[in-house]
Length: 138
Length: 138
Image 1 (cartoon, each protein chain N blue to C red):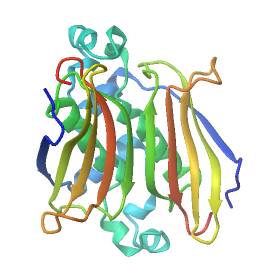
Image 2: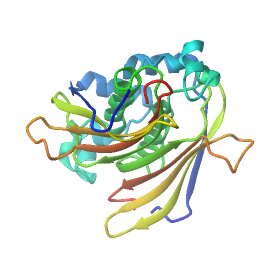
Image 3: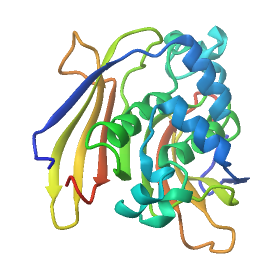
Image 4: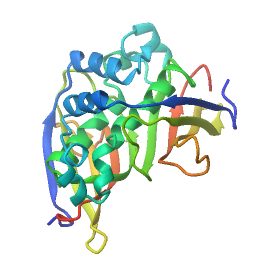
């Protein structure tokens, strides 16, 4: 059973090949991710060209929630995500999920979902909160 | 230039092959989407087995925002999503993005991002709000 304060952490690193596969699969061919001019004209600037699509990074959370923590059977009911800093290609980050609140009667928990750099534990690249349901583990 | 009340709409339909590709790409092999027993034990119930992963549906919005409305150059700064009703495989839905607020000075807009059934215009399967930045179009 999940409890408040419980925490799951894993290291992630997304490759350029995965960025290209995401572009093809999602259809999101926004040039900020692969064209230096497009990147420079965007709100992120030049660094965008080395960045992973925000929604690509977000897939890390559906994988963790649906297969590891709380795992198989989880329903992702709602979420919010803030993209604070670009997540760069071929760079290692920490993906963290921790439990903020639990409602045992309705089998629901609110989880914090973060992507951050290993060297900067207080700053987040992606900050999120999700509401998950698991009839057996919550 | 984007204005409040402006609206973009398109029809979407996700296939079983795409659900399987999403499972492989994201690593989210949660059995609720492909195993009837797993589905029945989940909070969604039996219907989950015919449902598309919520985060897979969410990719429709990154594609629309990044390539169509407002289009190339958009940065998706933050979002919230509520998965109200399952989105089913091989079923047509309407994906809608409309502008709720605009900040011309900071080139930001809040957009409503919805997935709904064509026959039920007032009900949403996915309800979301995003904050997007586009230095030239907002």
